[in-house]
Image (cartoon, rainbow, N blue to C red; front, side):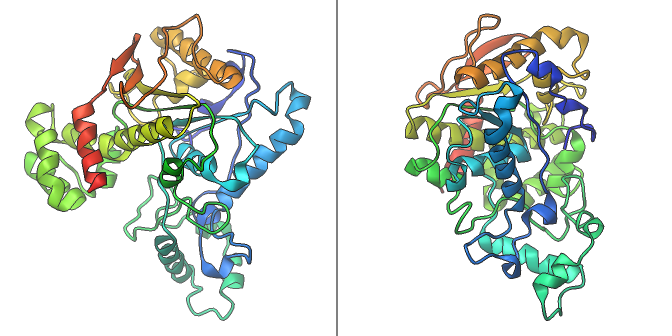
Length: 382
């Protein structure tokens, strides 16, 4: 979904005018409609729950069949997605069903969040009960008979909905479409090798309601910050508070927001980029978007209007938007985002850890917030 609940952020007209590209947007099933992995709905050849990904694959097959009629090149298809779209793209990057459907990928603010088969089945059993199909003799028929209006109102069906039951909807490991987690597949080199562009905003967990949604409560005082870190990270909470000391921030909420941004977005993105750079010869390009949005900070989704050059871009951001759009369209056309109208974007390597820092001015940052991100890599390794 677009950050303001409408489709205007994803109007591709201005982006298409920025370079020699055809912009195609698609819709796919979400929530229980897209990712309900109930064993009763599994097919004999191993499909289970990844209906939203199947929608995306079918859209990519349509592009292969038809894009020439629109002036496009089926041999140069870039898939790009933000947030859930980037998570889905990380799955498509390692799916055997994606072979030959695209040749570049851009993942923005999301990688590798894959639901385990056990967790997916647990969610499916809860949904079965919630929709009144708990005692059905034919579970598959009972689930298929549930009106879509009920399924889209389930807890956890959108990022802003109540999810006290902990329902998880997303790409799930199965035997056919997604046989391995993306990060594991990339570390083995079994993914589709291609030029990759990826990055995050600098403060993903903005606005405040998003922090409160993840933390489970408001965080206004240092005591509330301590309680939130204990809930989120248990035995590791003290280490988190040492690195993200509330005294260093304008508020306890800001401290938790940066910890969440790094733990859930920035560190996993760097981990993914390092794995890609080590597993393939094709280049990887990384960025951090740090141009403040309406909140005064660079939050989740604030890069989208700039790439699409939408009407949400402020007057003093028009030049930056044009430069960003040109990076993305040049990457789509050539596999390299560099162009003459903007500063050089260095190829990523784990050794130098350089990212394009897209702020009011564009520059290059080396080892961006490395001390913070190293904390989460250590925790992941442990």
